[in-house]
Length: 86
Image (cartoon, rainbow, N blue to C red; front, side, top):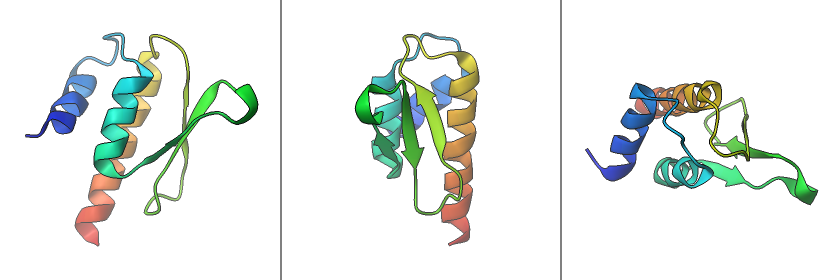
């Protein structure tokens, strides 16, 4: 497994491990997900990918709460499934 995949699996195994936005951004880059900063000083980053209908928002808080890490892992899983079908 490559490093971003390892990171994703560690997030899956321990969503409360004190993850930071830099960890989210690293996985996003590896899977081609756009991770856009909040416009005008907002508090949530917006994650999008052309194959996904839904957008995911992640708050810029440290550490990121486990519920958002869980949603992020599911988002990447959905993206992988969509890529397998394509």
